[in-house]
Every structure is written in C-alpha cells, then in structure tokens.
Length: 105
Image 1 (tube, rainbow, N blue to C red):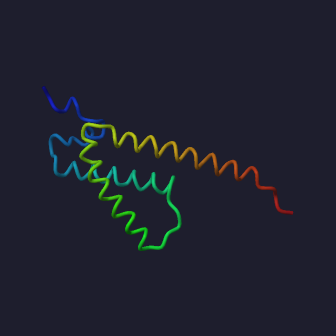
Image 2: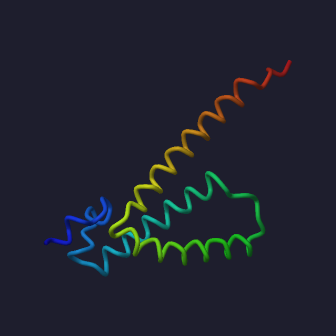
Image 3: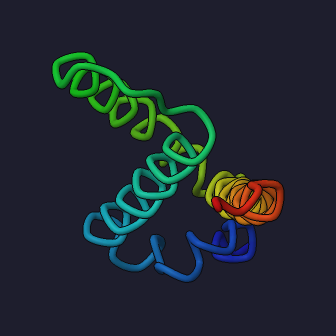
C-alpha cells in the first residue's frame, strides 16, 4: 500500500513523502500564513506590540502541531475555506457599510 494515496491535498501537492524535510517546511509556512490570515480577518484586535508577539509565537507553536496533523488530515484545506469565508464576509461588510453611510453635504 502506497502512503501517497492517504496524503491530504496540500501534503501531496508539496510531496512531503519524497523530500520530507524541505517540503514539511513549505507545508508549515503555508499553514502558518493561512493561520495568520484567518486570525487577522476574524479575531485580531489592536494590541500592544509585546502581546502581538506573544500571540504570534503561540500561533507558530500551534501550527507545528497542525503541520503534523495536516499530512493526513485536511487542516490546510480547512484554513483555506475559513480564509475564503472571512474574506467574503469582510467584502460584504465593507459594501454594506459603504451603502449605508449618508452623503455629507
């Protein structure tokens, strides 16, 4: 039985079964980038710089665990879907705010 049949889409896209060290870093950076995007679009607030650094450190630590899970589970794909939903939400929110503002005379 071939292990590449059970890989998630992004794990097979990055070919983590062939060059595991380098390609696992690519998978980690993809998950970390998508996690930052989802955090910024959905949950981020204005924080002091030190608190932001701490949040991103813990986010990076959590993405390490998610990277190992993302080899066989659709973690990255879920982050892509979450990012797309939040992007659509932000666009629609911006459009509704733009339409509801009365013109200044």
